[in-house]
Length: 509
Image (tube, rainbow, N blue to C red; front, side, top):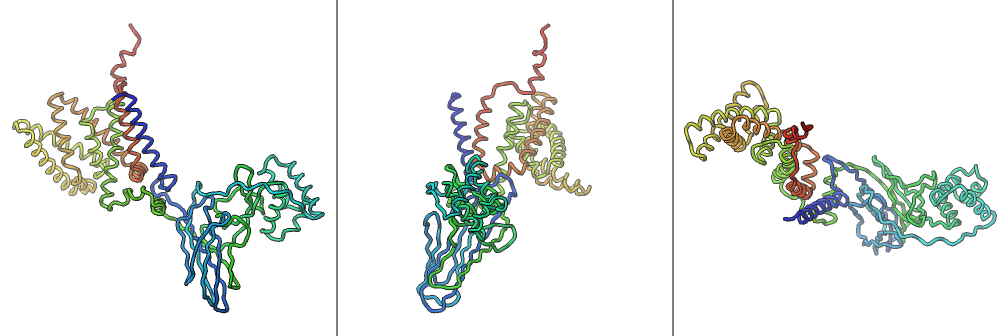
């Protein structure tokens, strides 16, 4: 396999893994950190009215439609005997209830669950620039003078709107603003006045309605807000304070200033909007979001497996993470170990016995096992019976240490029973072979190297963030695989060889 093929394969693996992971995080909202939480808001619109005589009723209610900064997770409509349809008219989403015969008190409910998403929101297209506006005297002259003053104090559309709203909020400082302010008596009229003045400046503007989302249960009213288009994008302003931007706790409910509801055939109509907040696990929210989108990511998610199977894969998926330590320590540092992945298996054993007690048990079992192995060597046994004998001895040693630690009151020693027997048997056998073939020094170096690398692998494999990422985003193993492929072509010096060949780098004599 040539280098180009290897690099192309590695690039494909990296791009595939990262693209799936980014999609799951950015679009579906899978969290990057364990125990991450997300805020949800439940919004309930309760529309009530009366019908004194039996007859038909039609009711309309504007609904949030792709609000900027929020996504709608779930919607419910509650009504008795009413037919329901929803449609989009002029950038507005409207629910329409209808019934042929109704009488007495009527109640219609709209409930929605929303969550914050900065990338959410589909804004309307750029509106046409308004025609020149003519007001009656003396307001026309005041408008022209005020616009000239504000234009001189601003540099672009955003600063122009801010300066205009500032003068309208403090009309006493400007006689023209004071005169024009007499046309508005409440917040909605003040916002509409700002739109009228901006129309005179040929700036597209409209009054929108927002609902405030707080963390405590509360009843809210729709508030007016200004949406300004500067030719490139929509800008939002508070018509009262003049502050720019759409606050993070404001949900844009409607794109015009008309009432949110309308009832034909009823009287005394009234709309109450109640908002409550709750916190939910971000991972659960992402699963619900993916289910609502009918995404393949949730259909092939590990969370669809039975709980015992998930527990198994939580361990198995960490083995490649431990392999990172093995590759680095062997190929780039030059630490000698028994086997390639035996330290990873020892690290898995440490997950059962914990690190300190695991290292102690490793040293005791290997030392005692080596002594028994050298004794069995004198009996000249065949390989398989000898391994079976060592395995039996390891089991007896584990039983002995468990009873000993129990008598000494050392609780951590009881976990020795969970120490994988086969792993320890292979370590003892491999160490004894190296002892015979290369001498005790090489065997001790290999044993210590295996123990050190296993300790490092245990620490890395125990990082909660890595466990979470690998389990939630198993596709991240593809870039990891690409890294192993690229590391397999490394032929440079190892760190340990720098000390070995240090004399060659000295000054020539």
